[in-house]
Image (cartoon, rainbow, N blue to C red; front, side, top):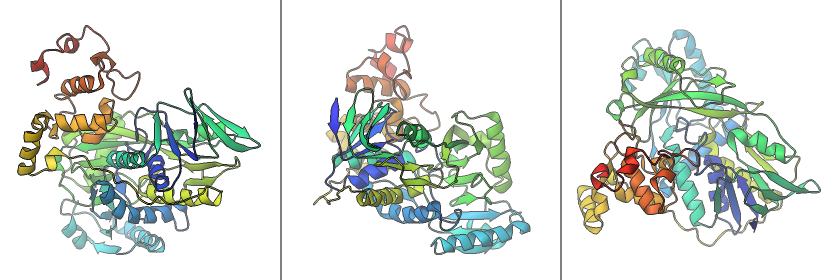
Amino acid sequence: MDRKCDVVIIGAGIVGCALAYELAQYQLSVAVLEKEADVGWGASKANSGIIHASVHAEPQTLKAKLCREGNELYKELAPKLGVELRKTGMLMVAQSEQQLKSLEEAKKRGRANGEVGLQLLSREELLAKEPALSPAVAGGLFAPSACTIAPYKMTVALFEAAQTNGVKFYFQEPVKEFVLENGQIAAVKTVNLTISTRFVVDAAGLAAGEVAELAGCGFQLLPRAGEEYILDKKVGDIVSHVIFPLPTPTSKGILAIPTADHNLMVGPTASDGVANTHTTPEGKQQVFSFIKKLIPSISERNVIASFAGVRPVSETDDFLIGPTSCTGFFLAAGMQSPGLTAAPAVAKMLTGMLAEAGLKLVKKEQLLPRSKPLEFRELSRQRREELIRQDPAWGRIICRCEEVTEAEIVEAIRRGATTLDGIKFRTRLGMGRCQGGFCTPRVMKIIARELGIPLTAINKRGTGTEVAPLESKQLLAEEDKDELFF
């Protein structure tokens, strides 16, 4: 199948989708190629979900510049796309008198990076803001601009807004080859597609170096795995700010994060050279032994889920953004923390670079808005009753923990979700205390009905992850018995 596009983006993570949305505002044909079955299934879903204040990165680095710019852009972008931005602020905590000097240095870095409102706090001022902190803390640094966001929801919102405005997304289409003419990009090939183009942006996350190698300008990224642990919502209000320790040479440290979904999350670890996404007993012990010294009331008994994400770290430890030795081939690579924060600013920076390289930018007269899906748990009783009268599916709760209805699941499928994870990251189905133990069979039946496929074909996250592939499973043998599902 042959196509022709002005720009091809490799990777539909937060950076790829942010760039797709930015380019969708112009009269361009844009294609996004993604090797997974949906958007945001790499580092974009498996991170801390923090919109950082720019107090960690050294001044004059891309990280510092784009973190600050991205933080500001989210204040307008998230509400515009219907994604909650939880304005928590950040507290960096010194655990000894000796560490107080490091807080002063962080404040100086932040000011040099353009942060405003930074405040050094005494022990008493810090404990007044967060009484759950250990009384042994020595002081803190307050950064008001920090927020939290659900990174998977933001990625989906950018995808939907870009798609609504003409960007074409192709899933399960990993790049196999680039066609070059006189050292310049001429086309991109996957198994099923050949797309002629002058411009390619490599936003392929941990695989960005391998993708670049296909264009003759490869490089290496170091994987750095980090384990995170999510606590039950009943303890979600232990702290109200994102709590940082003093950073280490390789990490911002083990944090306590009040998420946008109102759980508390703790982590991450930082294991260099590790690319797997498994959590470990050692990682859990490391996280909780550290965080309990900072916040004694946190307990591993309240963990309801855990995951590990892998950050792609460049040799320079900074972002790799811009043109390469292959004409028309641009990088958006090495997007470790604060990559989520920087994504909208990276998109604007790359759009400017593409224009300088000859991409003609003509603004569209009108950009179609993204319609935010309704969330039953957020609605008033009156609004719920109105919806149920219009469609009884609004009255059928499929996920009890997160109050997700059949109508929301159907809407997610109609917006592009074809897998269990696709529905999970759009609706939070299965993210509550039981982690899908109650709702998985029920949502499988809805997927089968809406997509017209057998239950054996339903998968968690793409081909090869089928949930119930054997016809003899009791679930399948009784699939027509409504009482099994409702």
